[in-house]
Amino acid sequence: MKDNNMDDSVNRFFRSPDTPLAVFLITEGFSLEDIVWEKGNGKPQAFFLFEDSTQLRELVRLYNKGEAKVNITLYDHTKKSLLDRMYREMP
Image: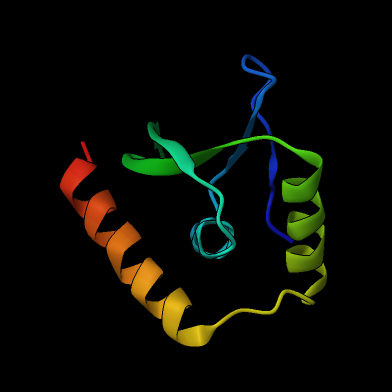
């Protein structure tokens, strides 16, 4: 299971390195607040920040249990857009 956790320094944000989860949350209408890059193992790793809420946490729970349902066309389009943004912003 992926490590999806809160950023301890900013309690109002949900922070995760899980790209498929980030795509899922965006397709569910959550706004991606920021992508934070951190160096790890010699290469930058993206962490996705979303404003935290009970609804978001419930969707993360469903995702982690394998019970998330998506519109695959919307998911694919959103994934392509997010990856494009990541490649443009990668340090």
